[in-house]
Image 1 (tube, rainbow, N blue to C red):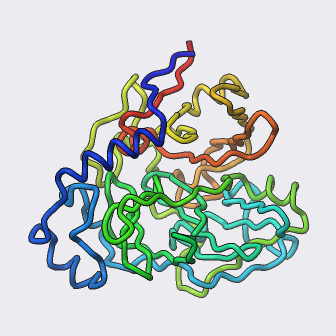
Image 2: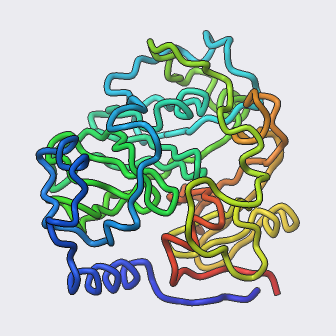
Image 3: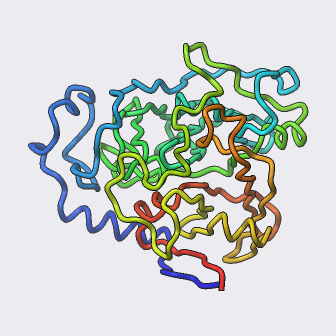
Length: 330
């Protein structure tokens, strides 16, 4: 196994923020439409170049986050195909919950509360980044929406309380009052509906939202086999890795799906990663259920406990963790 670049996540974020603090963008550089849409945002505070942030098309809340999700018993759900992906969250002492990608595809953020603790379930289709965050900042609950902006093709979220902007794939505050703060990533994972219900026959699943959307459809047909990411202007990943190849990210390390599929299980750097078939790609065919099999990854530590991880595309890992470590086969 070859390890490439070995800086820790803490050092990476610290160095990035320290460098950014030397050249904060001036207020005059803020586009007028930003200030009109986000009147509470403190644009004098930022850790990124405003030139790297672009419109994704829809305006603020044009992709509507879910603020008050409803749930039904998993045994009563009949609309979801067994191969369809869901985001699973199994908090200690609480009934397991599944958040179907068929809904996250159109809403990208679900604000929820599980076991008395607020969480934000997030999914950026353009990066395939799906993560669950503790929604408390400085001990206070925050709720999140979709800003309508992208940075390195990744969703920029905002919190409704301060209108600070957050990079979804890193959980880092990049503009506004909470610049430099990082949301706590929780151990959720993407798996097939069949896998979830097999393990949690008495679990809950998020019910279909009351919006007029083509739930179950993929608006990004053939995206994850494209040659180039959408609205991305950065470099391709190194080591001849396809930009839209899936990787498993744990902190600032990434393992390719290709390697994991070949080996079945990898035990390195304090984590055990396993792969099994059965989950459809949400970003392949017009109907999510028909997508090719990309399989399910689970990440655990040496004691068998779930480890927070993400399944982004390789280009997103390279762009957002430029000093990250590529865990390559020997």
